[in-house]
Image (cartoon, rainbow, N blue to C red):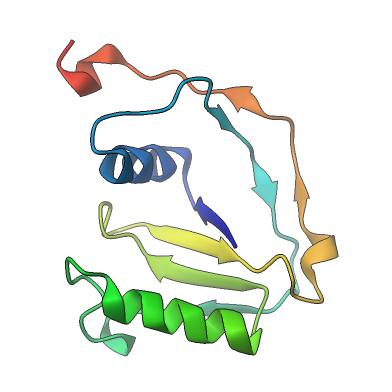
Length: 117
């Protein structure tokens, strides 16, 4: 599964949240282009009761069912750390995956103030 975000800033917040303040060196960002007309699902918070629980069990179960069923190429889900934004899950084994394109990777720059430096 390709786990991405709608916005660069949301992706950075997700990395901060999941990295517990420790980030691996030499990280890069890649812009992904999903063309019009591909299959997608948009998940709203109310559709997955408990999606925001610390265990993430409900959200993971929903995502796993989506993965196994190959219902769509893209699953757009709410971001826990940036509640007004969405994360984008892309299924690389879906029949439409060959339509997804990407740009060149670019190094990430982390502002030291995010880490109290």
